[in-house]
Image (spheres, helix red, strand yellow):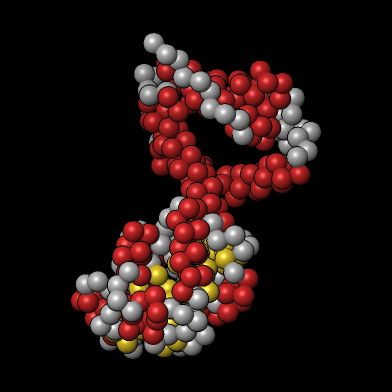
Length: 296
């Protein structure tokens, strides 16, 4: 594809358009507030008066706006849906799996190919060999979009034809990011309370992160295969470790809700009979219904 429209020129949309220009593509841009297009115009972008005009001029339409509500508002504008017929729509707006399914249905109705995407990095990290972008949707659309996607990042992960897959995997990776980040901040609070250098702590975490990533990949394979025989780390070890973390936080007078929750989940797994299985066996209880809340 040689002509692309970029709808939405926030920080990420502007970066996407810039990368496509650098890749030698003809780039048409539109934003609700036209002044954001000025810098791109100076580098060769063609500024459209309307979203419909931008879409009509391109083979592929990249949408990167605030949310799916903004996307639907744009699609509802005069001439936009008609302009999408026969085009590829690449939605890079962050949303839910249900959002992705609904927009895929709209694309089918107007006769457009559809890919839903989830960008896993910040704007300044786009266009690098390790830039990860998750995509899902029509296999044919994915094949058509290869050059476009390659201009945006080097690690494009195609997750299949279910349009909701990218948004679902995005939530899964964000669960890791937020869980790991909160665990890191919890550790920082504990280290600081003990008078330790939090900068040194950060350096230790950075150094151990690659090997821990490899461990988590192993645990992911354990879960996928369903073989929880001990291979690296017995769940019982983590039961004791998380108990000690919770106790240390409490002794320092620090907030302990997070370590208490983690410790409780491991105890629940132990009580369910998984202590002598691989650490990943905790997922067996995470698949179940939420624990009942007490009624006062």
